[in-house]
Length: 309
Image (cartoon, rainbow, N blue to C red; front, side, top):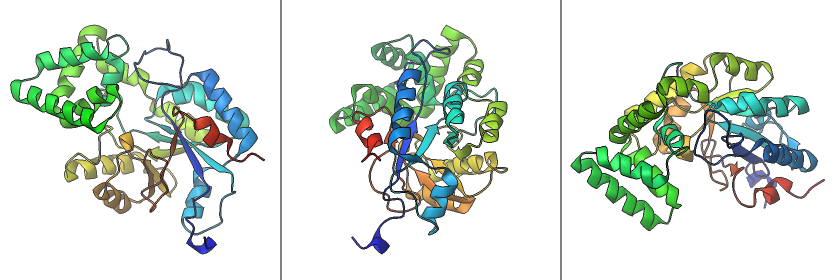
């Protein structure tokens, strides 16, 4: 292929992590995670095989400036989790490596997103128990909507856990969200306190920034931006822009659940973002359609290893 026609990020591998924690770390969550030992192994492999680059270098290449090394890798971390301050920061700082931390614009004392409520409940309940508890409290119309959404996801061949989670996060978020909150409050007490314990504080975000990390946008309520009405999409982007007001540009964004949409891309461009990442390994088709590799995916070691040095 003519080098002039190649995408400027064609050789870049962008890796994403969410939870990086021991299974019994508090607050407990019932979601897949990379344990600290595995994380150390992964970044050791990266250090032996690839060149870690920061967001400014990626943004420059994307904008037509200096190209990236052929073995470049960008490290990204989603959701603004306390794990990133408690565990990840130490590992990166020790190596002098940059990373991009996509932090939700939540405020201290706010409740969890619907997706994170499910994570908390699944720490002590089985998926069937969560499903039964929600169905029991849904009204007749919403129960029918939930069952229909389940059938749709099952027919699409998604993982069994996503057959439960996607209808609750998308179709039934407004109806199921308060039910999930009530289940948390009944079992753990204040959901807001739990949310503050799971997510980074403003002080911890400042620590990340002070250590040379880039802070990116991730919405405020962790919504499926390909599902929500346009006004909520624009509001989510506006909240992220306000959250990043003191961050140096160019800003980057990670779509919650990896769910991009043309409306979201337009809102991001209008708000001053220069790029956005989804959660698939497909080749980018534009600055608001940048792919990533999930650190929890099968075969990720081969991807991280690349061709070696």
